[in-house]
Image (cartoon, rainbow, N blue to C red):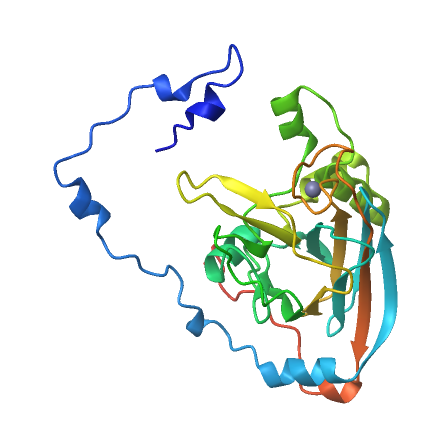
Length: 300
Ligand SMILES: [Zn+2]
């Protein structure tokens, strides 16, 4: 467990973690392993998302904005509460790294970890993107996904993960010794800085773990190592979100392209992505209000 000799013992001078002393299993190890798994969060207790409401909202809507995200770059865009936005594949298979913030408060940002714990490792129609503590409310709800047919494949991989983080120049430097300036982390930082009038240093702490739109990933069955494989997305595919609050979005067209081979370099073929913003008819939103932040106060 955890000792991938071919990985750790590869390069000369690298640390062979397998040489470290393993623990001795207790006599009842198998019995302990046989404890029944329990789903950690009962999502049936979450505030109800009414499918009929979202169907009405998306049934008759007009496009009010469009942003092209060039390959190996990011772009920011605004989505008013009650609007929908789509991330659309154009030209060729391409992964996008998505960050979301409350437009009025950058501290309220997408909480990848809790979203994963509440829903699943990979998101699709009906799942919601939750905001960080102490706010914890749905920032967006996924209303359509043309890749929902993919499910989980024979490798255990799915699409649109919230298990990766984002490619970043620090990890790349750690692993390769090289500097690369168009990792999604850097792209998102530059874009947020430009959007908010912040310096790079001021913007960087606001960049957070992403939703990996269109990315196909999983954990290997033997060692549960994070893996990626070529995205099944094709031009015309899209994933659609309903903005529950006023949002700033930022999307990076990952330098990994379809993430079928590499990232953090200029090697992979890359394509643009398109973001489209839609406004539903006013009648569809008549009784709708943005969800409130969590009423819990840790100071109480
Ligand atoms: Zn990336």
